[in-house]
Length: 356
Length: 276
Image: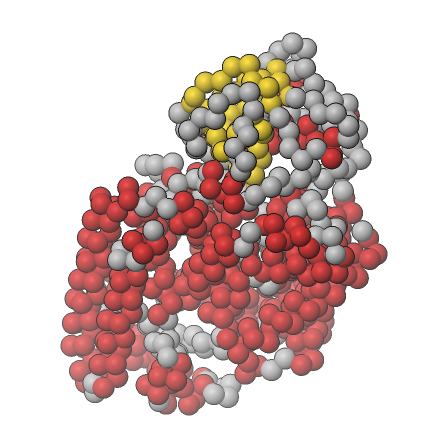
């Protein structure tokens, strides 16, 4: 079945890529004096390309929709669409908030609220993560704009980790899912906050600024705030959104391909089961507001393993890795994701031993 | 990806979000009903933003911004590495293999992937998860967690219904009761369940199943009840079944699956929300 979709989907995107690439190259060869003309022809080309794409979709809708009956393909498509659409409001909300931070809040405000010393700023950022409701898709662009506004990277990263892990909605969802087990809610809060703050401190000590790739968007000083807001939103949606789709593709594929029985087979082993659920959290990329409900359904696993699922999920998962790569670059992700995984697991084992 | 393309992509994406929420109920196949208003909001924001970007580009505003942008960016780039980027933007772009670099008017090529959800909505229009997911999830998910709550722990319809009444339960509520209610209040009660038909692996009977969703289809959990005293209907057809719980012998949490003895069943058109 998937072969049948390729004519519809793959060519449109790869065609777009190759055409856009073509324009890129041509653009670089042309002298700057020709820019005006190049922009004009490129615009027309783009409009034609999209007209073609929409026409192709109309034909696809008319002829292809009823032909697509492969059960596995449809399940995959459903999960892909579900992850994309579930994240979309959070992405738009997060991007709007981060653009508002860039455009409307003067830098001095941050200076007043966040301590200059990064070591002190990290716990403050961790605690303030408990205030902002949203899932991980929202927090990546926000953390990016915090760094751009002069907040210490370590503090912004702590916020990035804490906000999706311990915000009020997530805590309520966990309490609802684990009704009658308040120690699970407490353990989640403690383990996630501990992991976020420790990761922040590790970053203060060992992190290097040049691992982070942040576009220095010092737009024209004269540009209106609304224009800065618009440009900032567009930039973040294009970067974080594209990678969100990559993450959704990977998560949907693994979600459909990896049989759950494999997981249940290892549920008995104490240490391995924790690692397996941590891995599952990375692979499934479930929104942090929903992961408690999934964790509670994994009944064969120990409480510590479930805790690992809920601690690791919001700080490392495929969707998040792809989005962080979009905003901060791969050099950053290659160091940050393993760090989060290791410290998240250590924190899980520690808090799990104490509370569960 | 140039700015016109970015704007058009946003408009299409917003249109996909709006199409699946306002004129149709497609979004219920993928996410919880509570997401509806947020999806509409996100869709409106994306369409408006896309239109604004295209309008600004057509007015030629961007060219001015492009030229201004290069100068202050070089001047203010204090961090190492940034000066070089801007001095030779073309080599920078080649190094990274994508049109991103620090040229702010362009988006990375990965942004083209934002058209995939658009394609998914308009061409594939993915249906709700169904029998395939139930079958591939394989064996039973086992009993739900047992916790030490009082007898009032169930706030389903059965707790409120008087004796002898037919109680309408979600399949999730039914299996929860069946597995963890040590009082066995479910015994000898007539219940009404709604779900879709799924064949069993060994052909002995069939399942009445429904997926339970916390947030989106990626976290869907299978709930199913075995039925053996009726011939299996067509896979994925929806049924409202009235019957009683076949009370197992022995410990409840050692039962691998729960069975329903059917009194009456009627086919239903797909319920508006396919998930529990």
